[in-house]
Length: 271
Image (cartoon, rainbow, N blue to C red; front, side, top):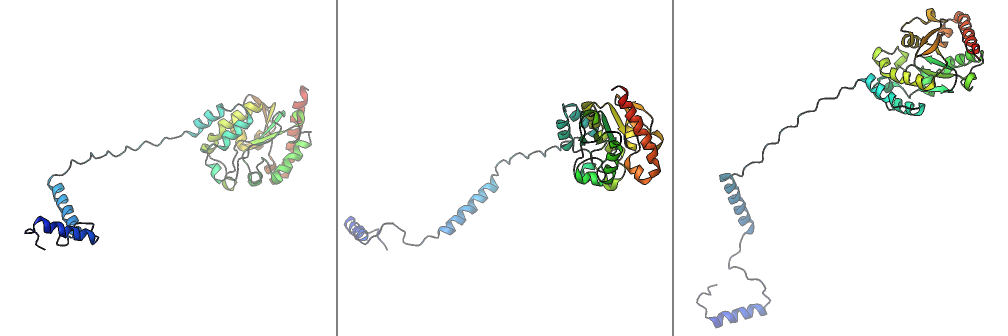
């Protein structure tokens, strides 16, 4: 529509008519493609950026990998054991100790059983299958035989003080298939054992295992060492054949009985 030659009266009349007709927006004579306009604007912006690139952000340096901290299991165990003021805290520390591989295959920690105030501590090697299941040292058939052996001289796990028995092992976790623990596995828990003995302060330690003899006396050969009094951990110790040996060689029960009588005589000596 050509309106350039309209006079003011005609233009005003046309505008009044449009308002009365309900027109609210002024539009152009021809349609405008706003999408095309947007595309053109984007194209122009991209070309401008290409011609005048913005300074790029500085490249971030790759983080330097931190060296993996190597843990010395024995040193860590020594640190934790030193902090333990009682048996409860010692047990908690051992339950949280993750640097002995044996714990991965064991069902649970086997700590100890009996009266900590008992005169006699029995020290075995490691939990067997029954002990791993029940959570108590010397369980199953071996445990029954051990209980009968010591009851014969008036001692038991249920007893207190002079009539009591405190039973534990060098290693608190069962080794897979009851294999012999290796040196690294033993070293990792030795600080806990030493602290255990310091806290209990037994009058006598009965060594009932090859590993127990090795760590106490630096010697192996329980059948050869049995019955010979010695000193270890600042405590009198007496090696005695353990129930597993006696179940395999019943003839050794006579020697075990002689050793038990020797223990009974020692306990009665100063009472």
